Image (tube, rainbow, N blue to C red):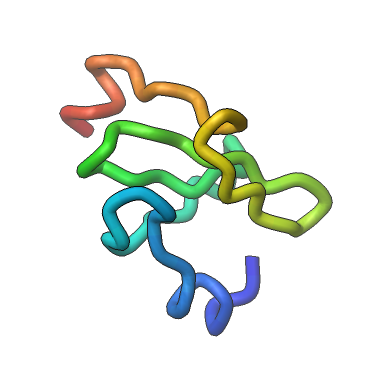
Length: 60
């Protein structure tokens, strides 16, 4: 994931910063407890494509 791209991306719902999980290839929004997939290096910033974080992920 390009660091410059990550700096300008924000959660489409709450506009907060996102954390990149390289291992899972996801962008994480802790505020909304959602993980947006990154497919072939392209962030998919659609709410219906995001998965809900587990309770363990929310705490971590």
